[in-house]
Amino acid sequence: MNWYITKLVFNIAAEQTTNQFDEQLRLVNAESKEEAFLKARTIGLREEDIFYNDNLKEVKWEFVNVSEIIPIDKLEDGTELYSRIHETEEPTTYIHFVHKKAIALRKNSTLFY
Image (tube, rainbow, N blue to C red):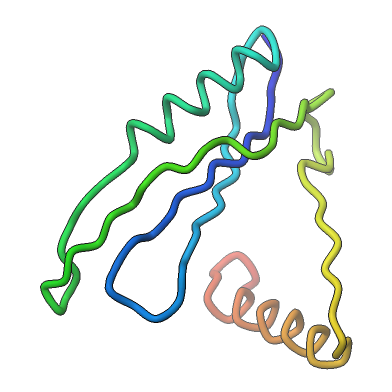
């Protein structure tokens, strides 16, 4: 069996002004990429949902599809699982954002105390 990172995409359909999509990275154990794809699709279809939000508006989580499958060669401490290049016109703002997230993680975690 091999490990794969799969990206599942969900459309969040609700009464709102912007379209929202949730991209989820899921770890899947399979014999092949094809099996990993099918397992990931099954997970996505199983997790479709309809519920009502706090304003009693219907919200649908509709599974779109599996958009990526990345094989993991080995699982060990420090293994890179996923990488994405972020491009921006404002690098200082992005770097500041990353530092703020790191500070929030440290403040909200008992691991650093």
